[in-house]
Length: 167
Image (cartoon, rainbow, N blue to C red; front, side, top):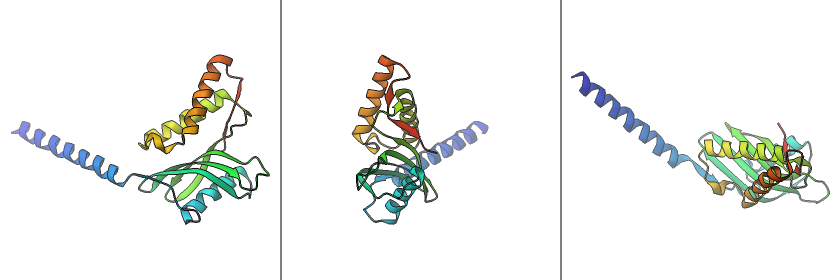
C-alpha cells in the first residue's frame, strides 16, 4: 500500500513539474519593442543612465527575452548624432519592469580581451539561465566573442579587445 502511495505521489509531482515546464515555455518570448514604446524608452533611458549621457541612440539591434516579470535585453547602440563614442553592445536586465544596463561592449579595442571574454561568457550564461535562444544575441556578438577568445589564446590577457562592466 505504501509503495502505491509513493508511486502516485511521484507521478503527481512529475506531472506538475512537466506542466510547469510547458507553461513556462508558453509564456517565455523573444521580441523587439517598437520605437517610442514605453519599454523601449525605458531601455534607452537605462543605457543613458549607465553611460552617464543624454545622447539619443540609434538602435541597429534590440532583442528582449521575457519570462513573466523577469527579462533580459541586448541592444547594439550608437550615438545618433555620431558626436560621442557612446553605445556599443549593451546587455540589460529587468526585474518587475525596471530596466538596468549591466554590461557594455565597445568594438574599439579599448579593453583587454580577457575582460571581453569574461563579460561575454557572463552574458551567455545569463541568457542560457533564462533559456533564451541563440537568436537573442546579434551575430556580431558571437563574431566578437570568437575573435576575443582567439586573440586571448594567441596574444595573452593583455591584448586589447572591447568589453566594459558598467554596474
